[in-house]
Length: 265
Ligand SMILES: Nc1ncnc2c1ncn2[C@@H]1O[C@H](COP(=O)(O)OP(=O)(O)OP(=O)(O)O)[C@@H](O)[C@H]1O
Image (cartoon, rainbow, N blue to C red; front, side, top):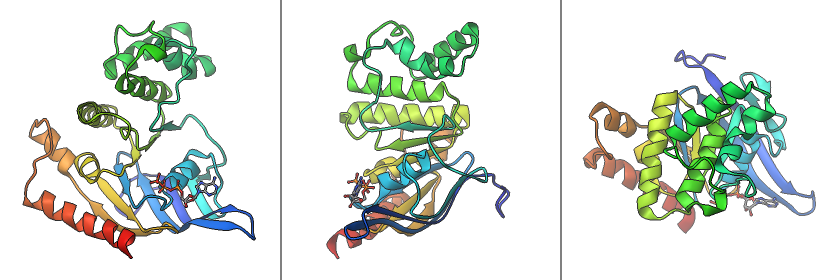
């Protein structure tokens, strides 16, 4: 599907409603979500705690089904998890009994790729996440940031069409977090990835995203969207971090006001 601006729509969310629980004891988590994720975008989701961000991600991952409405991937309903939508959570969900190498090779092995190709994929993505030389380590020997990089390499090894990330850097210390943001920005650019990232950190959204979507308090609805390009400025000017100018602070304040309005009401 191609939209009116000639961009390929990878995921099309139509009138999505998501309800937990039973009829007599139900929680409306998401209501009337309409959103398109286009190839190549870096979409960041912000919203107050409990507004349904993870519910949206789990629906896109195929872990839960919409109560009504539809989630389509390249025109077909998402009916379950598959490798075309890779997921990275806040706590890396690695196989602890496996080495770094085995974790990264897991997907390609499941796909029964030839041994040589599996090795090439593993080497390439461990290099991309800067873990060359850690192949034989057990994952319990690694720091939090390194574990998260293995989780990322494991997802990348499946060549997903979309990477879904749920607060992937939320549990990391400040410095590691900034390094991980730089890494994911570089990978997004180098691989022409499409990324859907949930965060509580407005600076993270502003410095990484090409679009920010802000959700209301529960039931989560889309309140506002911003197309931004601070991340492109970083590449175009060969910077190490975002340029904190008046435009940046005005936008940050506007977003803060919207989110606070949902908490204080
Ligand atoms: N399995 C479940 N059963 C019942 N209610 C649930 C379930 N999962 C989530 N909820 C409720 O649905 C609402 C949305 O939850 P969700 O985790 O999607 O929000 P969130 O925006 O990701 O929150 P946070 O930012 O705190 O991680 C919350 O009120 C939550 O308590």
